[in-house]
Image: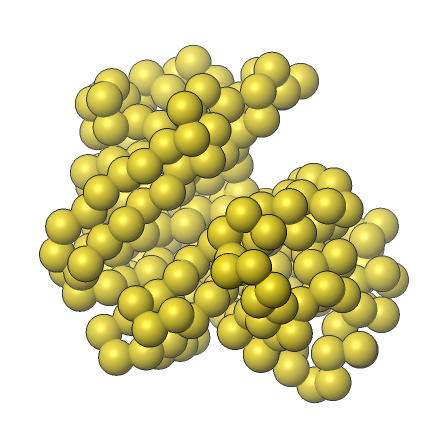
Length: 244
């Protein structure tokens, strides 16, 4: 969840179950507030998209940003039906798209490329929507579920990747957070989003080691250990607040 200084509210992905996003929003928004300026779906894996279906049903949304059409996803029929209820608010984006949320606050779309990696949307992870949020002198890279192939493309692309904060790709899977990518992003702080005792073993030890080598042990945050991680910035400095 992104909340800008002037109160613009952007939800990126919705979590693995029907109530994931609505539970989180109930804690994040003012009581009775049922408005979201923007919702972003990074890709149609159910652990990212299922909660968005309910959120779009419950909240008035200004715009919905999506990446590639993915008709092979089991959730595609539900997602398509939900978007049709949004009355043309859907914007399909790829690399190079920029959204000025307000003066000095910009969302940059870094992925997917115009030509899908692998030739189609079938590779959901590598074609997921990667965002870089820039606010003054601070920035946050939201790496979705990209893996080594997409990370390598971004490293070679010449796009600005350096960011104050990295939300690590693919929940800390060993398929992501390559050394070259971390060197290019060069974050001060990193966050891994992973459920406690998840069956995949995320984050994988080798990835945690690379992240720790990059930012230091004290500046690596894991949602399975720290709970909700809140980042607060005035455009120059950055503060972190955790649930536990």
